[in-house]
Image (cartoon, rainbow, N blue to C red; front, side, top):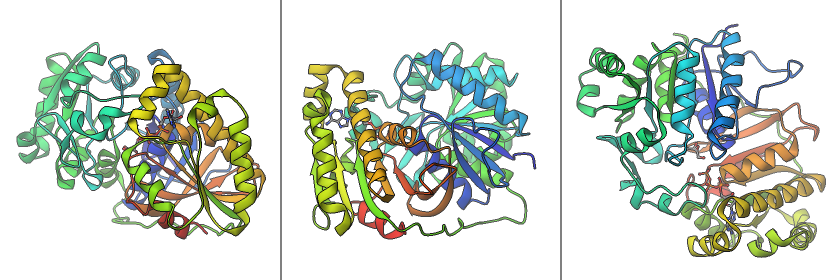
Amino acid sequence: MALLLGCIADDYTGASDLANTLTRNGLRTVQTIGIPDASLPLPDVDAVVVSLKIRSVVASEAIAAALAAEAWIRQRGARHVLYKICSTFDSTDAGNIGPVTEALVAAAGSDIALVTPAFPETGRTVYRGHLFVNGQPLDESPLKDHPLNPMHDADLVRVLQRQSKGGVGLVDLETIADGEAAIAARLAALAAEGNTAAIADAVFERDLVLLGSVAARFSVSTGASGLGLGLARALRPADRASATADALAPVGGYAAVIAGSCSRATLEQIDRAERSMPVLRLDPEALIDGETEIAKAIAFADAHVADGPLVIAASAPPDAVAALQARHGREASGHAIERATSAIAAALVERGVRRLVVAGGETSGAAVDRLGIPAFLIGPEIAPGVPVLQTVGDAHGGLIMALKSGNFGGKDFFEQALAAMR
Ligand SMILES: Nc1ncnc2c1ncn2[C@@H]1O[C@H](COP(=O)(O)OP(=O)(O)OP(=O)(O)O)[C@@H](O)[C@H]1O
Ligand SMILES: O=C(O)[C@@H](O)C(=O)CO
């Protein structure tokens, strides 16, 4: 069957967040890691989320990967492609939200894309083009200290303009309140003025429902799960007003959490987990230096994993992250730690871990690649934006995983996730 919606996600946790939203809003969805091999047995679905790892790579590489995914998706009949970005607009002046959006718009022969990272369920709202995270302007929120993409400007029209060749306009909340025809007219006017993107305000779910209906008439849009909700409502078959994810077959085995996110939410979750399970806090400097710290993590797992879930974390607070980056460079330290956390994830699976939570987008991407997982089925939601996942076609006999975006989940997220993963 032709796809009703094709999505390209700029990281793997964001992809599972979107796949969760699409599933809960009536589209049967599968998450693939990259463009799937033709031999991979995928279920019959309405939507595919192709997960890429292009949030923090050079723009030309991100564009090439996104265009390849777009071509694959269009061959499967999808008339609309959603480029899934982070609800906190993680990017730099070099990209990649602007360059990828413009490349997708051009590839589709379209003229403009509606862009909104709003996701009210997780506290992300956009008003007058300014992004608020749990009520705080983006540049005053914990995202100002993000290890890879520190966000210092809440005005998304300005942020996206710095990354774009064409103009960037605004569809404001008043226009959205006037309904679909007003939104469509505003987009047409912005396109006629030479804009290639339009940031759309959205504060409530109803705004995203209207935006989704209008966006679905175009070939490409860019946004977070909130826009996914709007598109799913617009595109789902009439008899599927709501849907719940399928229950996933239990896998048993040991359980563990690997954390590489340094977000405030993840740091609080690690603190909280200390009350109920063994937690190893790795020494980031030693992780960069070599194998000894990885061996320490594996010895820790050997000592505890048979007794119940455990947590292994590289995560550190902003001052410690800044100090490490000053010594080793931002990208070099991030990548070295991702290599280490993914090696630890692989060692845990070799030791019989079958239920694995990974916290952090880049951290999850590195771990999923290292484990060679080609795709995920979407299970029940653990917390907004985080579903239980079941691997498809991997060499480990099937794993149950959760890929937690750094900022998602309440303080007891790890306990909650492990209870939901059987
Ligand atoms: N102690 C540390 N010092 C410096 N960098 C670290 C440390 N621990 C982890 N990192 C790096 O910080 C980055 C965290 O990014 P990641 O995407 O995993 O988390 P996040 O940004 O909080 O999550 P998301 O992208 O889902 O919002 C990774 O590159 C990770 O390797
Ligand atoms: O949209 C979000 O906030 C998440 O899905 C994500 O992409 C964080 O990496």
